[in-house]
Image (cartoon, rainbow, N blue to C red; front, side, top):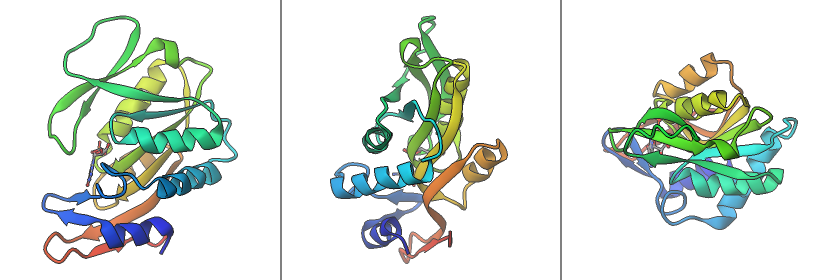
Amino acid sequence: MNFLEERIQKDGIVKPGNVLKVDSFLNHQMDIALMEEIGREFHRRFADKPITKVLTIEASGIGIACFAAREFGVPMVFAKKSHSINLDSEVYIAEVESFTHKNKNNIIVSRKFLNADDRILIIDDFLANGCALQGLIAISKAAGASVEGIGIVIEKGFQVGGQIIRNLGVHLESLAIIDAMDAETGVITFREQ
Ligand code: 5GP
């Protein structure tokens, strides 16, 4: 069991509806020593890639992406969630369905901060159905940039996102993959990696 799986086992709370709450160390209160370790681990896994930018989505991806970007020595850009369709030509837009809020948002990134020379590492906290990642991939493509890899802290392997993203041929690394979790017993089963 790796450092992250141990922490999820200890402090993660399984909620009904396939939701894992990790707000005591990742999503609300953040354990900075753990964040540093996560940043180092992403750097180790993508060390051979010429990353120029780390891209994530607000809000919970931001802290994690900062630590990864620090390791690579590159800027971090986060997609903003907007509630209206923004027709401003100065932004890239993609539509994303939220797993936790069950609504659709446009996510936007200013054209100033992504361009065709960028080699992007996408980072996010969770992978569930893959909608957030598909939005970030669409924005990277709109910029003409290449997606060199995707780093996820917790993949819920029993949902479809992992397969969808791997089928796109993108190098996806998830630090912990959950194969099953039970809201009644609280038992979390990790995939051996
Ligand atoms: P997806 O777009 O892959 O369906 O969902 C990923 C996004 O939904 C992540 O950015 C994350 O914020 C949120 N999310 C999905 N599943 C969970 C979960 O079990 N717990 C928490 N805290 N967030 C989740």
